[in-house]
Image (cartoon, rainbow, N blue to C red; front, side, top):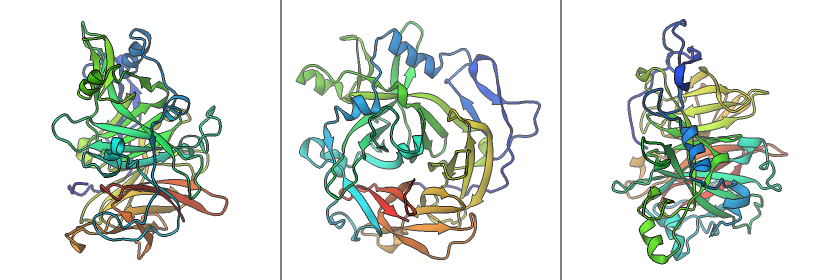
Length: 425
């Protein structure tokens, strides 16, 4: 994460959204001045007369005949990757035991064909969300399957492929479970005049993700929340010959040579549907992560928190959701100070809030150290001591209720120590 200027906490009053011509949502001019943490929703780039991302996706399906894939029946059924055992947790840079109270964990596929997942320096995992966030349990119509989604961002400068999401089968979470998984590339659907429907890579950090029904919210640090349609995941070609498969690693979108669609060697793409951007760019809110809160009664909400390397003055902001999974009005329901630096993930559980935070870099310049799980209760008040140890390089969090208490899912980002784990609260 990068260190940037502190976002000032000035309040949560906001302007509701109004529908304008062309499908863009814009602030109502009849309301008062712009809020600090207000959001505007966009369904396309460019002029209001342009093609919406949803329409471009529909064109890919109806005009270009791309097949719609189901995350369980297609992606998981054909998944070629298999998670590895978590190991002894001391196998990478730095030195640290496993997190406190772990009851399930796995590493990424370390076999030669897929070893980039476990130890590569191109793709870094960042966000995590589960089917509990989306549906309160298993995936509807998925035969009881429980699924975790993990976001990654591409750190490579040349040929950057943006962001991807791993679809992981976490139905069984016993000590010997090695979940199957596969990656889906996040893309922006396009329609240029005189050109076929196509898509491009995103350029998202994907620091946190939140699955809400059909929607996957992806936090992009400086630009807001990008929302992808999980029910319009599309199947593309990987090439029918070894030579084509090798060349296809560099192709994304429509390829005129054979009239097929490619996605840098991935079998599936998930299209962008709409975007929430700051209504007031002077607000300086950093969208470092995002999580779902299902513990506040009938109303679900999203919680975004900020990351600052040294400053404890970041904030967390909550927006309520409507029944269809959209942000209800763009008005922030509440905002509160974090009180600690280096916050990588945040989840609300009733009136409690849990945070994952890195250890300070200067503790050991030779390598990362274990992060901490913090509890803030009441929300916005000072935290006096960590509530337990996390992994090296901890990132996003996702809450899951249990028969006795609850658990949080977390993950580690560093090559050689990348794991997904669940800990008891």
